[in-house]
Length: 110
Length: 113
Image 1 (cartoon, rainbow over the protein chains, first blue to last red):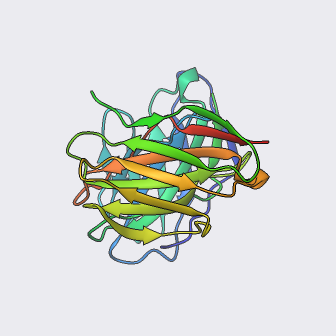
Image 2 (image 1 turned 45 degrees about the vertical axis):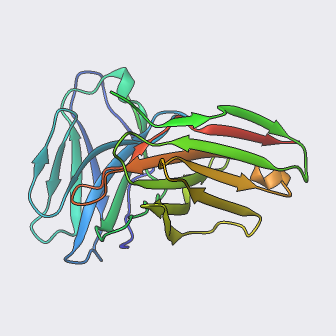
Image 3 (image 1 turned 180 degrees about the vertical axis):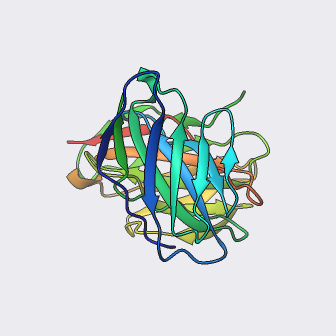
């Protein structure tokens, strides 16, 4: 699975958009970009994932650059409950189970 | 909506004892994953099962074993416990392809004294 690079920490004012960047310059053509977050000592929570098109759901938006070497997770209106460690994970989707390899992530403080 | 259930939530054991952690996946999820998170560390993959067969293995010590049963629940067995095994142990389940979103349980906090 491709390696990812994220800033170790970021601050965001409540009510503002939080933009969390992720670099994955060695991503392969069949690898997806997944985002998870972990609120202190709770189980990680799935946020969103995408292959090459931008994606949006009720939690967030995912913007993937055209060359797929980087992406940005956008939380449109951050609240105090969004304070968490955010993990960007690049992974292929093959059959029979696909582990998540967590890096150091970005600690977002709202 | 139903979530992943893990039991027990907290467990205290002494060195060299054994421990069994249980995981009940979300109904109709056929894949189970186990992760270990040490203090101040990020979650690390241990092992996974798909349709009751082991599908992948990470850095799981030989002292640990796991299996998935016919009702899809899974158990992680840990023997000869060491102080370094103190950690949060998360179980996750997923439906597999195409989305393969993993849903995590609340974790079991294991303390070895």
